[in-house]
Amino acid sequence: MPGRLMIAAPSGRSGKTTITTGICACLKKRGLVVQAFKKGPDYIDPSWLNAATGRPCRNLDMFMMRKDRVIKSFYDASQDAHISVIEANMGFYDGIKLDGSDSPANLARLVDASVILVVNCARMTRSVAALIQGYVGFEPHNRIKGVILNNVSNKRHEEKLLASIKRHCRIPVLGIVPRSSSLNIMERHLGLTPYKENRDGANIISHMSSFIESCVDMDKIVSIAQSAPDIRPNKSYVRDSKEAKQKKTVKIGIFYDKAFSFYYPENLESLESQGAELVFIDSMKDHLPPNIDAIYIGGGFPELYAREITKNHHLLMQIREAIENWMPLYCECAGIMFLSEGIKTDNGFFEMAGIIPSQVEQKKRPQGHGYMEVEVVTENPFFKKGQVIKGHEFHYSRLITTDHLMFALNVKRGYGIDGSHDGIVYKNMFASYMHIHALGVPLWAKNLVHMAKKYKNGCFNTQRSDKKGVFIHVR
Image (cartoon, rainbow, N blue to C red):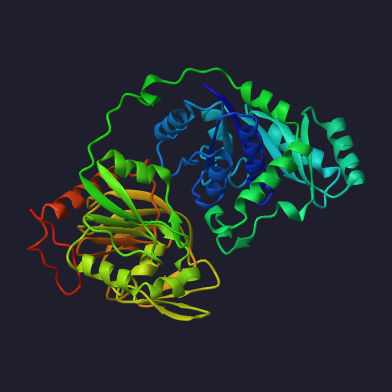
């Protein structure tokens, strides 16, 4: 197994993403193959880790995925890497469960990764030792091997921090990162700006790399990563490199541009493994490509690009006609906004595809934020009735009118569309505020490709729906 490392922190907003991105870029500059992971559900931080490593960042989540799938995903992606680096989320011991079984600390134990704790030292001196000592001693076998002190204001501040740690803690300080606005990535309501939207992203990462190289002991970082036990994973966890790729039998259109960029790589790879050829579509420029058999619209920020999207009227019309003609379409979060009658923003109202009979408005506060658990209660193209599905949501938008919609999901945890329901069903369309991960819902990709094959073979030519758009299953 390659070297393994987790970058964690006592709390969120400690600088983990900046420091993890800089460390990954430094390692890559040394000629090492670096595989990045993000603990928990996230699309934005991984976009920066993708760019820093040149490889898809993978998410490891113990709420949405079974433990064996988390381990398998880690081993599969790490096989050809020199070092695997996991960016933790929230605080090191945080999670939904009080026993900490879904915390970054337990994930580090699960994959035997050494841990480096990033401590935000703003407005702190001697207390840094108490904080570090508390984290090191809170749980046994926590694998914390060193600390990086972040947001250090000046030399005097640095000396006080180091003296306290030397006196009270038995743990090495691996880096002193001075406070610097040059390391900041522009933020918006969902967090950092995604790498794809940042025109200066490559220069930012290059600067991060040089900055971290100058103030962090990268030789010790590599040594700590390589000190992780040389374990041999269970054979069932290891990917079969000889696994045959399925013949491409259908084409699935994927909205992928600045407005729609939130996709877990495993979701796209799962569609390909089931025999789908993926055709990427720019919602602001492209028309619907010929011979498309299904469509997948992920999350993103259509509200920021609504003016450009509405100008591409031909694509809006094509999508509306495709759904009315029973083309399978699966969408998450931002896709609801695209399929609505239109988006109300501070800059005006922008017409969208008009399939979902409601306008969408953008609010100042989150309308749904966190993990979701839902039960499938209505027959639909993609999920079996009675199935329980886990995912997550993070949206500031909401549908203005919902009384007349047909829902497939009852929300057991989370908010969804109206606090109780999610998953709008109309013909072969399924639209939800919930994001899912293919490793947590493995039959999703198989079902979408299956529906695409049925559409391609003309199985839906004679179908019809009632006035509410209830999906009618072909027996």
